Length: 180
Image (tube, rainbow, N blue to C red):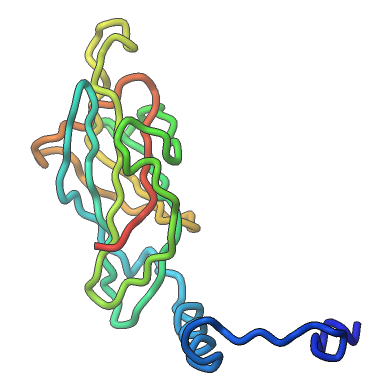
């Protein structure tokens, strides 16, 4: 036990940080760890763009911090798509592994200052082959769950233009959140 408290006394050499002082590194670490997790009530969701290629669409969405203090997010959002009658479209949301390269990024902590945003993508196939060549179900609403939470934020998709949220094949691929 005494070896854990003092490495030099047990024959180990004390190591100095490679860059900067130990005090400044500790202060930087404390600053990044004391920022609280973003609360869903202080987040605004919006669709901000899309891209498409060979039967795939990736809709870009963002979560903006509407609070007066910084907050942090880490990981992947959850999502549930609803039709015009607010019935669930039974699609499995997968973390990463989709068609677009950003679905393969590793999650990282994003600190949002007041008014700042983090983005993420939701991608899906638009090929009706997996639906027996029938039209794929169209989502009119998106219920988004921020990472590490259970509260859902609602976004109307009707009238938002392209892309039409019509996921085929039963799967949606989420990217991790990233800073804007």
